[in-house]
Length: 84
Image 1 (cartoon, one colour):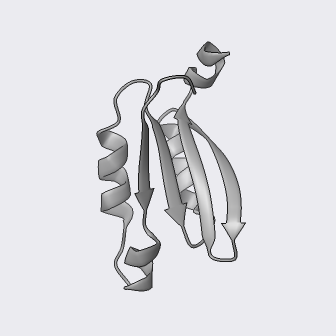
Image 2 (cartoon, helix red, strand yellow):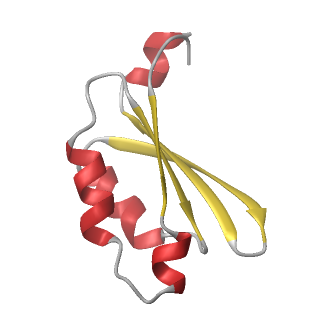
């Protein structure tokens, strides 16, 4: 990941408070600059988001850190290959 900027967003608290985080997530994604990586922290694996962001040119990697803490890293397609 060299010197790329990582943008992190944790929506676990929002969901705990019954707040829908979709607009917050999409706002963060829209503001990504070329080369930036988006890391999302959620209480579950956000499968529908994978498909949506996949259609926008992102690939993803999911890690389950704890029972209710999933970390999903979204990378713009083509970015991962150019770093090696």
